[in-house]
Amino acid sequence: MYHRDGRYFELSWRQVYFYFLLSLTLDALGNGLSVATNLGSAPWTAGAANLAHVTGVPISIYLAATTVLVAVANLFLAKKFVFKRFLGNITFGLLFSFLAGFFNTIFVQMGVQTVSLWLRIPLDLFGVAIVGVAISVYQRVNFILHPIDDMTNILRFSYFRGSAPKAQISNFIFAIGISLACWAYSGSIVSINIGTAVSFFLQGQIIAWSDNLVFPHLVHGNMDLTHKDIPVQNKD
Image (cartoon, rainbow, N blue to C red):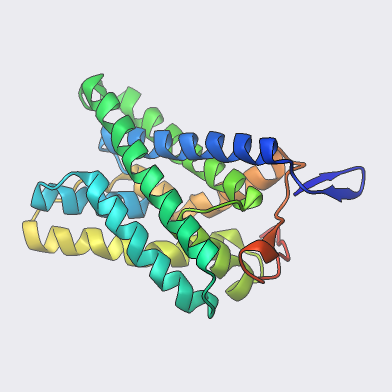
């Protein structure tokens, strides 16, 4: 939904596709870059990276598996089944999984992992920030969402009165547990570092800031097309 001069307008399909494809690409690029730096990525991506590290299975497979499991969990959190929403979760998640894997491969081939630490740190933090911006945009478009970010939306508007930081941290707790379990099993851990800490504590705030600073006239809308959570926005 678009807000201008005190009035609300539905997005045209051209606008929906533009914002959706832009945010999907930014999300995958940011995640792929943060994993490639090995200085910490978003907790769910880090969990998938650690599972891949332990088993040798490509990270894209674990990202896709996470998509399905979280999409099912969302049915229980939302307390209703909407097939369009569930299918959208799966579609977005699969597109993201393989696109993030593609970008990660590109960045690894470019030698991102081998550059000096002073350069990898800002690259990693940039990747984490880009993810937050991307989430903000496609949550506001609310066309189809990655199930992990749809979970944040559900928690934010149904359980935490619009607070993005509280919803994001609650979302991440289980993901951190996956990485810790892999560490306990293998004795080593990857993609958990400064970027993970920034993502855990600040990504919700980055989303809230982006709501106001990135495409500020784009607001949370079309909620009834997917679920009936009331989008009462909170600046916290």
